[in-house]
Length: 64
Image (cartoon, rainbow, N blue to C red; front, side, top):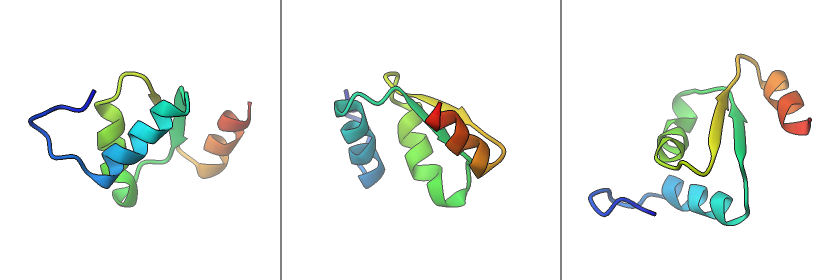
């Protein structure tokens, strides 16, 4: 449920769509380009964010 004190962003909408699709995990390498999405994920208890150190590692984890 969106926080009423927070202005809704495109990242919030993206995360809401992922929740609606039943996504449980997101694997990523954090970076400046993804900070808005990671911030939105941090406010969403339905999806667990797994931080990885390498993009290939994230891809392997997501595949398994």
